[in-house]
Length: 268
Image (cartoon, rainbow, N blue to C red; front, side, top):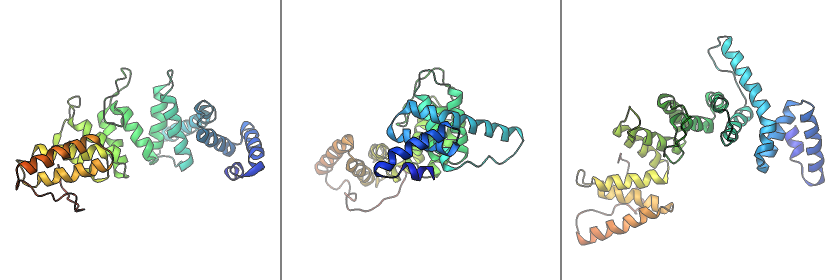
């Protein structure tokens, strides 16, 4: 109801916002959620925290009470509540004096509720990594790769290609004791299949590097590199130029099957 009023057009919008704000300050929880959404859309993160943090802490306390009661199933939160928890953790993490415990707790609640963004954010936080798969060097951060892999896998299963790509990075890097290059290739391929540009480029590079191992790898390399180039990957375009020149210089070494629209499934 409040969201409908705030979304009204013309002169009613400003008046309805004033009344919604008054209701929110008067303790009407529904209006507080509307105000949090309104300032989030306006890009005012400071105001967002003012409205969202008390609501997030209430949800946190509710979840803690639920756990203390020994209930096996997690409490059910609405999509609106889960979104608020995810956003609140996101904004808090950007603060220099942020409480990392609050951020992790908010995201754990939202991730348990099935919020894909929270699952991905929590996975990155626990792995100490960025969305591009690079290390996020924050000394105070507690790294837990097992939990990170759990949440990133859940996000990937929900269709988030970035989660599979980060998982490939975790399994191919030496800082992870469970380094597994086979799994890294598997996750990179899944990300590439879902349209992740960097994963497509790396699948192309990998296939070309191992073209002597498998006869179809030259065609596969071109297939992935063309997909990456179509998404604006400059490195993929440059590599395609070199590959095509090499194939012209050595005719008969490969068939340019890629580019015909044929979809080739494989693990590069």
